[in-house]
Length: 105
Image 1: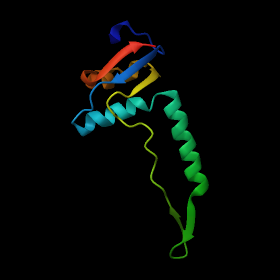
Image 2: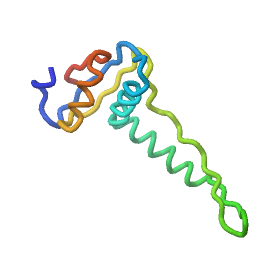
Image 3: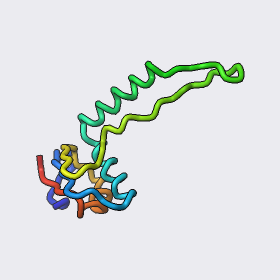
């Protein structure tokens, strides 16, 4: 399937089953973060955290109270996203191909 795709072609990816291995789940979430709508949501939350970050004095030095990041890309069974296919992502996609269904968008 990946041989028939061209670079920058839009593909729709569906997660069939959540992997038991933590590294496979992280790879899938990294692929999900390639989707434009997830990228923009992550950027919005990053900008929001920058606005609401509190800086206090600790030992007469500025101390930033940082917030944890928002998990926008969550690998749940049935999750579907559209992303551009890039040849640099081929090995990541092949490593978790048993959990994914890939088709042209």
